[in-house]
Structure formats: structure tokens, C-alpha cells
Length: 174
Image (cartoon, rainbow, N blue to C red):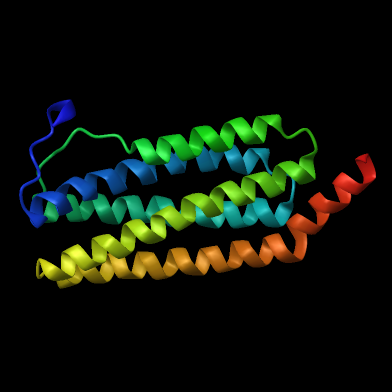
């Protein structure tokens, strides 16, 4: 494999590899969220992003604890998918010149990332359960559920405020 990573020949190897990918993804997202909170103009969006950042920071600590407790071998890895999501979001956000449209763009980008994470944690929970790691399976399942709740809150914010304001901004500039 690339980057001096070991070959993945068992489900346990795959779980180890994914655990490091999750940690990398969450750390990358944590840094992006700090910037995006400052970019948002809506106070409700800023608040929602701050709550999401708090969740991500707490989750990174939990995953790192699992890596230590489970003696998951160290793998040097970057989550290229998360990196691409963040780069795409930053590029699009930079192109938005209206603050309300920028908020809609930012919220949509965060939801795209959130959907990826829902899939990621669902898969991790299934792997952990299959490997007999019930406590870890529960943690990842709880993370999946929390990500779904965050997605619901983001959808509500988009539907009831952010997208309406962005639409009005477009109408005023047309």
C-alpha cells in the first residue's frame, strides 16, 4: 500500500485503517469549522457550527482514546475525501459574494460532509460489532445517530431561515 501503510488482509486491519481515517477526517473538519464559524453571517448558523465543532472535538478525543485502549497500530494517513470536501467548500464559499448566499453554501457544504460521516460511522459500527467490540460499536452507532440529528437540525435551519434569506438576496440583486 501507499504511504508505508500495512496491507489490509482482515476485517480487523480494515477497522484499524478506518479508525485512523476517521480521526484524520475529524481533525481536518475541526480546523475547517473554526474558519467557517468566522465566515458565517447568520448568528444561528454560527451557533450551530460551534455546537458541531464542540461535538467534533469531543469525538476526536473518544476515537483517540479507543485507538490507545485497543492498541490499534499506528497508521500514517490523511483522509483525502474529507480534504477534498473541505477544499471544494472553501472554493465555493470564496466565490459567493453575498453573505446570505455564502451562508447557504456553507450550510450545504457542512451537510455534505455530515452525510459522509453518517456513512463512515455506520460502517465502523457494523465492523466493530462483527469483531465483537460492542463498546466501540456502540460509540460509533451513537456517533452515527448524533450526526443524523445534526443533519436534521441543519436541514431545519436551511429550510426555515438560511435558504429563504439566500433566495431573497438573489431576488434583490436580479
